[in-house]
Length: 141
Image (cartoon, rainbow, N blue to C red):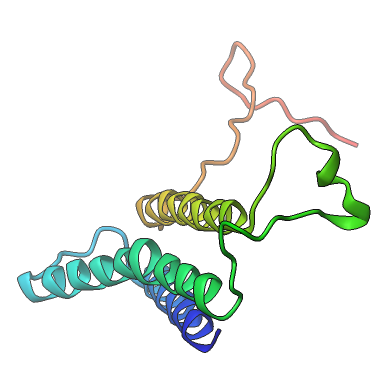
C-alpha cells in the first residue's frame, strides 16, 4: 500500500512540476542543449512512472496484501454477480484496475502534450462587424 501510494504521489508531484514550469516558460523561448536533455529526462521519468512503476506497484499490492487471486470470486453487493452466467474473479478486477491506470495515464499524457503545445497561445477577440463603408457596427444602448 505504501509503495503504491508513494509512487502515485511522486507521479502527481512530477506532473505538477511540469505544469508549473510550463506556465512560467514563454512559448517562443530558445532551448539550449542542456535544457533539452533535462526536459527529455523529466519526460522519460514521468512516462516511466505512469506506465511502469505505478501499475507495477498496484499489481504487487493487489497480489500480495489484498490477496486478489484467481480462485477468489467477486459476488458483489447482495450477491448480484452470482446470478450472471460468468464468474468475475478478483484477479480480473485487479487487471481491470491496472488497465484503467494505463488509460488514465494515456489521457493525461495527451492532455499534458496539448497543454504544452498551447501554452502562451492567446485567443483572438471576435471581430466586430463592419458596414460597407468599413466602419464598425456598434449597437448603442
